[in-house]
Length: 249
Image (tube, rainbow, N blue to C red; front, side):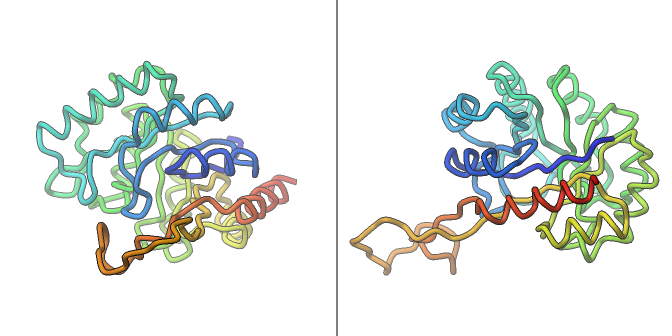
């Protein structure tokens, strides 16, 4: 299985930067600041026009856990069908039961909605009860990729679990390593656990162009300045691209 460098982007600007910097594939989402949610239709359409590499769309209706109400699940189904029609190459999603197990019934329904699209089980996997059992269930469902940090906050802390998952998957499922990935981590985990696919955002803070600033009012997350914008860092992604290429030699 040939490894891939996937970059997660939540804006048209970041998508173009990531593509030009050497990403093999993009995960298109909204609101990276809260872990990512389903992107807007116009956002996806603009990225599709400008980026001729595979686009996988995150379908996640809200921030928080992965135990969804019937209404939320219907949103996920409808969004997958919509992005399929809009030209997505894949979808990124996941549902759990209250006991921490994979909701295989719902995942099977989502797989049917996705049809021939590439399907990634996202980091819901990292908060499931038993990752090794969940990997087997995902493989049985025909899921193509599992995005995981090895059930840790960052992938370097989860590398022992990641190694077991890579060995267990035996190329039936792509293990896409995410969570704190940069060029140094790519080199480290390629050597130590033979990981070959990596997921990163490579984001940096860009200062707003606003001249007038009323800093008394906060519209979003507490502690995050209203005039800080997250954007893909071209040099960071280029370094990751170089690391990926070196590990393939």
